[in-house]
Amino acid sequence: MTFDFDPSTEIMVFTGPESSGKTTCAQRIAQLYQLPLVKEYAREYLKDNGPSYTFDDLLAITSKQIELETRAHLEHTLIVCDTDIITLEIWAMEKFGLTLKRKDHSINKKHYFLCYPDIPWEPDPLRENPNDRKRLFEIYQAYLVKVNATFTILTKDERKNLSLVL
Image (tube, rainbow, N blue to C red; front, side, top):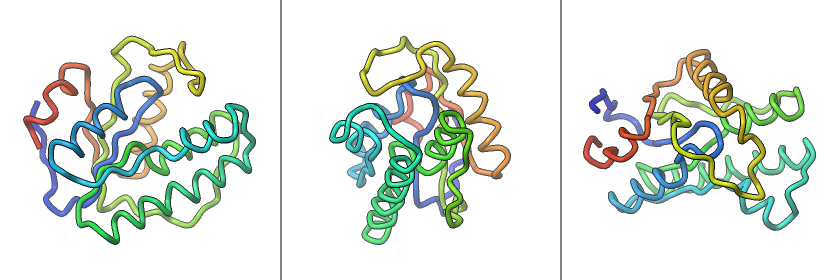
């Protein structure tokens, strides 16, 4: 796999539907290149507060995710994120039919790696969508196009070779 990776990119974000390899890729790249990793805060929040959540919980998760990303980026030029605000925006629309109504969170210094759900579903008590990952992938892709984000689609084979192309 080859693609143009803008050298001014400061944030690499792994995004896409549940159980598509985002966390594994983000951890692998952060470790391989010794870069700071901003973890998906939603997992921590839901582990602490239970798997049921409200829109207000999602707003709290969003605020903390942005805070963690901002703090890491202030301390380091290049960071890796296991999801970001786009995942939370799609989550708000899918789960609650609402938007987050938040301040602009710039994407112009980000490169998104959109993980295609071509790997087996891994059950997890915090996951919700085992049967419509391809539909959700299309929503992610349309959203990234809509906001004019720079992104690369990663299939299973491309995820395996990811470390060879950065």
